[in-house]
Length: 263
Image 1 (cartoon, one colour):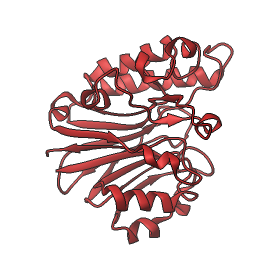
Image 2 (image 1 turned 45 degrees about the horizontal axis):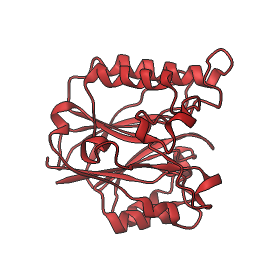
Image 3 (image 1 turned 30 degrees about the vertical axis):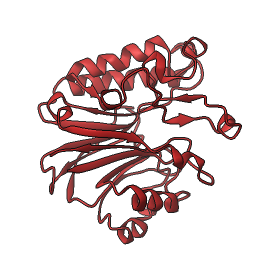
Image 4 (image 1 turned 90 degrees about the vertical axis):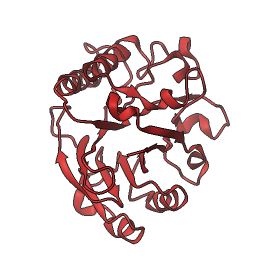
C-alpha cells in the first residue's frame, strides 16, 4: 500500500510545524505541496529530513507560487513544465523508485485566475485558460500510469461549491473554466479520485476563505484534486480530506487530501 497526499500549504516556511504535525498524524508516504512561497535554497529541508521524508524535489521561486514533493520513498525528478509560459514555478513531476515503482506523480499549482472571468478584461484569467489548454495537449500524449494532484483552483461540479447559482460568475466555478478543465480530463481519461471515493453530491470541500471560515460559515469549495490514469484509478482503495487542519492556529486556507493505492 502506498499513500499519497497533496496540500496547498500557503507558505511552507510559515507552516513547517503544521506540515510535520500532519505527517506525524496521517503518515502519508509522499506529500505534494503547492504554494510553498520560497526559493529552493530556502526550503526547510532539515524539518522534513528529521521527520523521515528524506527524498525531496523542490521547484520554488522567491515569495510566490512554488511546488515541492517530499517522500519516504525514493524518487527522481521526472520533469518541470512551464504551462504558465512565463517561468513561474507551478509544476514538478517525479517517478517513484521504491514501493509503487514506476508511478509518475505530477504536482501542479494551476493559477487562480484573478477576479474577473473575462480574458479581455483580465490577463490572469486568460493565462489560466491557456495553462489548462497546454496541460490538455500534454495529457493527450501520456502513455504511462500517472497521478496528477494539486491545487487546480477549479470546483467543477455544482455540489463542489456551497452555492452553485451564486458562484456561476465567480472565478473557480465559471462554465468556461470547467469546460477547459474537462478538455484536460478528456485528453487522458483522468479519473477524479475525490468523486470516485466520495460520490457527488456528498460534501467534499478543500478550501474555505480566510474571510468566512472563522465566522463558522461553511462556504467551502473543492479546489484541490487528485486525478489518476484510468488503470491507476482502479488501484485506489481510499481517499479522504483532512479538514481538522483548517481549524489549527494560523492555518492554510486549503486542507490536505490523501489517497491510498494498492500498488
